Picture: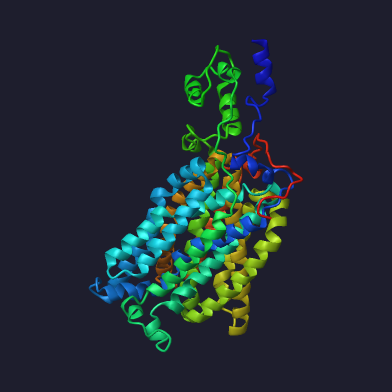
Length: 529
């Protein structure tokens, strides 16, 4: 008993640091050791896959209205928007239903498997959407695209497993930056490549493009997805695919029968009862035990308050950001007499394009050192707090003359975009810091499902809020657009408050140190340089 008490008091690992030379997780564990840089090819693959994941989501918006109109399902032009909304949201509904399950699959069977399935889902269902000849085919193909594409779950988890803690902010920045680029490129592809026989009659004379006027942008994206299969195959797997051999002393010290049963299934028999704290055993078993054969991580996720709080911050900000994008577009094109900027759609596009280029520089150059200095909690807190006065200044931009208003809106848009991406990236880091490697996929899957709900409410809420603001242009308190940006500031304030204790444990500011060992020789040539 005395030895067992000393063992529990010292809290040393209960499992031996065994490694398996045939286990991909063991062979890539050296990447997460202090100073470990992400392999260049793996980093490139993560960025290109994140770009791919964004393209199908936004490429449909420029032509979706015309596609629904061509289906002749709407009884009037006023009801076209209803069907556009159904098709547009069907992908997010599919993600909501399966996001958590893809995370569990990624934890048990590997990150690359889920990535492969996601790539193939884009190849198949995105192209089928372009070939749709009726409303139900379009709705079904978009829904299944969301159901089978859990790629982002694996990518976000993978990003934290191919480098040390010092480089995590940089890798996550690559993901968020390429995602943002995809959100800009997607509508461009959809706008320029849809209905090619009308826009480019001399180039596209084949009648197949006349029968399927919206197939070309979808085909382009599917071909791009096919091209990424080769680079995906070269990505090193990071999930451990073996079970450690555990000696009998480990199970003999476990008094909890559930834990005993779980460990026995891994081929270990017990000898005698002892008195080691149950929570200590569970923690050691979770951190050191890398085999996934009989372990279901989702059972513990809902009890992990650090993860739940991080997901809540992610969802609140997602709702805020999506609503902001909707409101910004409406406000920018609305007449100056009602508090808008009277910009054209091309003018709004120029503002967003300039913001995107500047955000790319911010994410790749400025964010990593800032994140390493402040930590992800400090970044999320500071960025959300700075967004409040910035949003409060928006309504007054319309009172400036044309030259000054252009300069002001470009500067404000750049700052707001940079702050938004900073909060997103910090939220990714917080979620990954909240769990160990064997739960990271499930955690990101849970966050994807939760985010899908918040994103669905964002555009509808933002549009309704803006419409309501137009009915109170002469109000005494916060007239017109002022009430809109006031509520946007309140969402940013809620995000900021959520980064403080007791809501968000400060322990998630750093990644959990896991007990593992690598078979990789540190002097050997690293994988995928």
